[in-house]
Every structure is written in structure tokens, then in C-alpha cells.
Length: 104
Length: 228
Image (cartoon, rainbow over all chains, first blue to last red):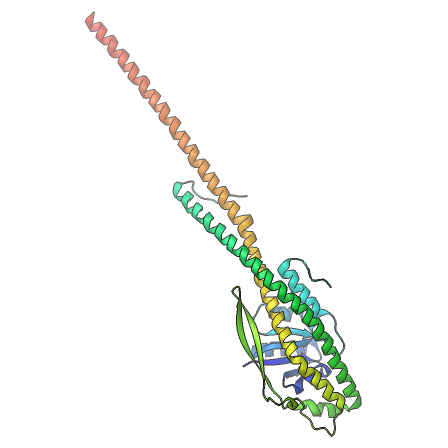
């Protein structure tokens, strides 16, 4: 059995806590990075990470892209969406097809 | 295209021909694999794109509800209300094989079947907005997991497609032309040797005929000398 984790600032993650997900409060990318690697080493199959933190963690996220576990999924935080999550989808398409063929 | 550095022998030729056949078959198979992967990938990534948009919108909605709830309640109460969850979620991870790529299938189980268990707080100190926010999030959980599954699958397929495409290209533009060129080179070389050998034999035959003729002439002369 695996866990589902959420990493983000207090406001963005508090709600997930009541659902029984593993939540880690992180206000800086450094904290989030530490939490990410710790959760990945533990039994976390899915880690939700707010885009606000993900901005400065591209390299760390990249590390887990090709592994089957964990899946790192970016979600918008309370401050709104930065469009990185959807950009990630476009990047995946570009990697596979060679050009971004998703329309907007 | 540079040819391989091999000895132009008949044995090498057979070996290379066999390799060329294998390379061609491999190329065809990999090309089929790439096409099928691409087909699967495109349908998954389209779904992924749609789902991400809707999930992001729903999440922002949930965040809004939370913002309202936290405006109504004091932050201490809010945190206290949510600090100790009653509900727990565990995830089982199965693997599905798409064209020899193992992709995850998530299946989550909530610790308690009771839907009301998502509220880990009493009703006295909390506001209705908080309930709304928690319900929204709870309904979103399944979509969130589905999103995770799709996104991970898309990423893993993308990697496999990239790899397969590289192999197909390497076979098509490097391996196969190289083998063809080397085979051609060996055939030419062998033919050239054959021709060289043939002309040498003809030359030797000519020389031997010439010798035989000279010998015959000499003998004739000797015979005629004896007679006279």
C-alpha cells in the first residue's frame, strides 16, 4: 500500500489533510525539495506539489520523470495557477512527437 | 556513408547479409511499435490535457472556498479543525503493460466507507464554507488520481517513444545503409578478384599454349634435321 502526499504552503494543503492525504507544509523550495526526496524514498506513489514551489525545483522533479514511482503532479496553489502544470503536458508531447501538436 | 571495416571474404559477406536481414526486420518491428505507441500516447495525452484543465479549475474553486472559510473562521480554529484527519487514504499501485512499457494504475481505498468521515471536526466552531471546501476537495480526489495516472503514463510513453524513435532512425539511417554499402563493397571486391583470377588463368593458358607450340616447332625441326 502506498501513500499519497501533498507538498505546498499551509493554505493550499490544509484541505487535503482532512481527506487523509499525507501533507507536508513547505514555504520555500529548499524545504519542499527536502520533503520531496524524503517522500519519494518512502512509500509515496503520488506526490502533489504546488506550482509555486515547483518553479524552483525543475531539476528535482525531472529526476523522477522516468521512474514509475513517484508520480509528481503539479497543482495550482492558493495563489493561482502559473501554467507550469499544463506546460508540462505540452513538454511531454514535444518530447514524444517532436513538436507541440496540442492546440492551446 | 562509411562502410564497416571488415575483410572482403565470402564468409564475411554471408555474415553481413544475415545481419542486414535482421536489421531490416528489427527496423520494421520497431517502426510498428513506434506507430502504435504514438497512437496510444496521443489519445492519453489529449485526455490528460482536458482533465488537467478541469482539475485545475476545480482546485482553484476549492481554494476559493477555503479562502472564504478562513475569512469567516479564525486561523487557529481552521487549523485545529483540520489538523487531525479521521479519514485515511491508501493507494494500491498496479502495473499495466502498454507495448512493453509498464505504466501505473492507481486504485485508492479510503480508510472508512462513511462519506461523512471526511469532516474531522465538530460543527460548533466551524463554518459551512469549510464543509463546502472539504466536500469539493473530496469529490476532486478521484479526478486528481486519474490525472496523476494519465500524466505519469504520458510521461513514460513519451520516454519510450523517444527511445524507439531513436532506434528506428539509427537503424534506418546508419545501420542499414552501412551494411548495404559494406555488402556492395565485398561483392565488388570478390568480383574483382574473380576477374583478376580469370585473366591470370587466361594469361597462363596463353603462355602454356605458346610454350607447347614452341616445343612442337622445335621437335619438328629436330625431326626434319634427322630425316635430312
